[in-house]
Length: 320
Image 1 (cartoon, rainbow, N blue to C red):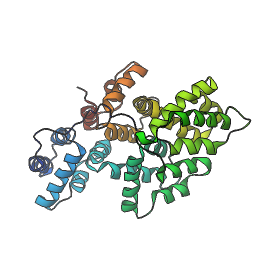
Image 2 (cartoon, rainbow, N blue to C red):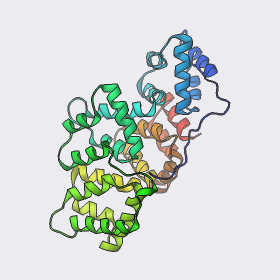
Image 3 (cartoon, rainbow, N blue to C red):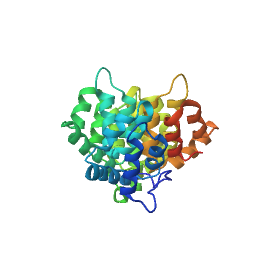
């Protein structure tokens, strides 16, 4: 996918799962909870280290760390702490499941999780989903979406995307740019199948070349073509793939801004992006956020959140 970004959370040096496990047990035992101790430990460890702490908790105390945290915490503070403690693929599966369960579907969440990730990351999610829900992700998704949008997500989930430098072919990129032009701007109406096929099958590296060639073929950017030729959920999904090929940090900065700006806060999206990108590229997302909105991500979070929830998010962002 994109080159490795700048994380804000890295594995702790001199890590000791037993010490951390004992400190967390002490923070939750007896009368009252030491929330700051929980924040200090869990925001300064990688997810792999948190899994070691959870295993120690089970082995040493015969207890489930997630269940103990649930019984001690509440509100959005509980949400962000549990997001940190779950394995990354399991956490994203829970978010996908929540987006599809009950009345209505949150297509924005499906798009953000599935259209921004590499093939191997998506396959980890697919495997975890069936383990957690005893149902294939593709099957659940097909029952909740329709049309060309469903087709695109199905292609992504079935793992057809090429990966790595082996699939990069500059000559073919020109042909594919011409195919996209002919399917959209070069004809009356739009052939969505061509957009789906190319954007779901090609590696992010190849797509980068195709989008460069598109400017030569059309004289316009692929973004302009998508804006004019596509609509609805498919338009948002294809635009997300394009953004994540060209500048994933800017895409997530925009998603965060939408979650924070306006009336009320979309805490679910705020937590999901900050937690899931903290070990990937949250450092880059912070830079893009400030460039795009002329304020720091820290100050935006401070203005919207409070208490232990705010402290946890700021610790993950790397703010004061």
